[in-house]
Image 1 (tube, rainbow, N blue to C red):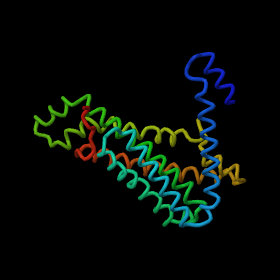
Image 2 (image 1 turned 30 degrees about the vertical axis):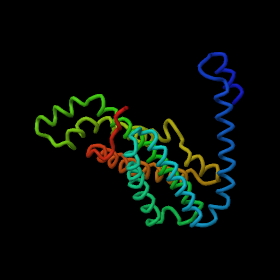
Image 3 (image 1 turned 90 degrees about the vertical axis):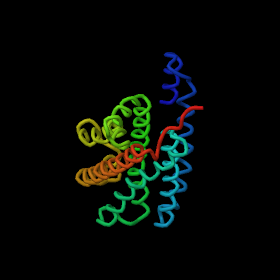
Image 4 (image 1 turned 180 degrees about the vertical axis):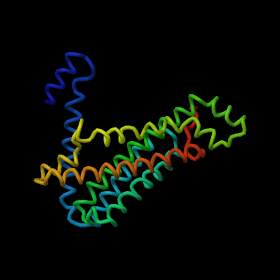
Length: 232
């Protein structure tokens, strides 16, 4: 499959033929390393928490880099905390997810990954909207609106678009796609009912986590705590 994709890249000139083999090799190497680490980490709760902490740092760096907001982008880590810090404890306290490394890492990773994608997308779109529609912010200010409300008028809709992928995934689950959690339970010899229960749990958790993350990211940008640094 990798070779076939590389040939198509070459024939159609849509990109460098080495792109797919390089990506596949990198992915295989990373998964090999992660698999070796997880074998040991999943056996204990404390080591699973260490893995989650490393994943959080990686997610925070990704959001910081994609937002292109300079040092102020570091505050977007709070949006990740808002998402994962609410959903994962709810799952653990309610008992739907056991306090065990084998459950903490995959579930926490899924929730964190969803929050990361929504946060980075909402922040990037909001900051772009502020740059392109600065005149509208000034007009709102001239009408007596606060700086926060003036910015919200501009960024609310564009930032809210970051929630659409998660909403669409939930609306179409089972009809258009069978997500990873569902398939994973089936492959692990679970029943279709168990697979469905796990999947809807994950999707509901993602919706809440992404909503919390985007809401806080938008608020940070509206209040000016996170802003794009002017180009030199």
